[in-house]
Image (cartoon, rainbow, N blue to C red; front, side, top):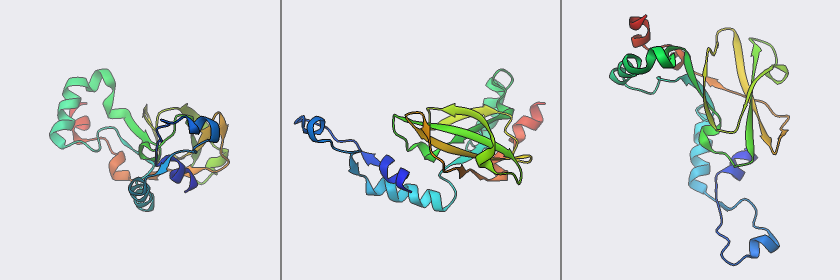
Length: 164
């Protein structure tokens, strides 16, 4: 939770130059952003993995498949979102996976990402659990956070099964 408090702040504008001398911290607390982030965390929606087309309407899914599906391999792509976009410029995310039932902390590293949202192919939530660690200036936290996986949002859209 500390990470969310530090990363849901509004940056300070240092018009007087005093921040360079005295330091100003991360910025001003943005209570609305913090409450929204806390609500998403409680609902399991803060850090998610879902099919890249899961949030699109059915007709939009079909359009994407018709126009980009074969080239982009959209039917096998998943969006991995860390902390719903709340991040600082020095943060990287270490994506881990472990076989179901094994500790994610000791899992395999899939990638390190500077972006709070990445698109990957071939995520397998039936065989593996997924989690992540946050890293600040290349030093990773010992805390590992597990992703919320909604199996409905992991399924390929109907447009994918019709186009194959």
